Image (tube, rainbow, N blue to C red; front, side):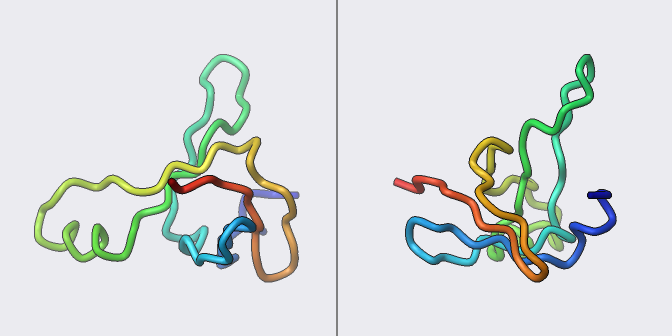
Length: 82
């Protein structure tokens, strides 16, 4: 699968059914040595608004190993949020 094919997919948490964001708005953290994807960094909605006004750009970190399924429209992750 190409990175461009991930664009537009919604990220959903298997544990609570929560919508975490859309991959198009996310950053990908890559290990510089191995070239492997380590983490998806998905900005939270309130943080996206803060970014418009010069705030910090942080979000939910989703480790790549928590991804359980990549479907046509969404990516399902198993992430403990608490």
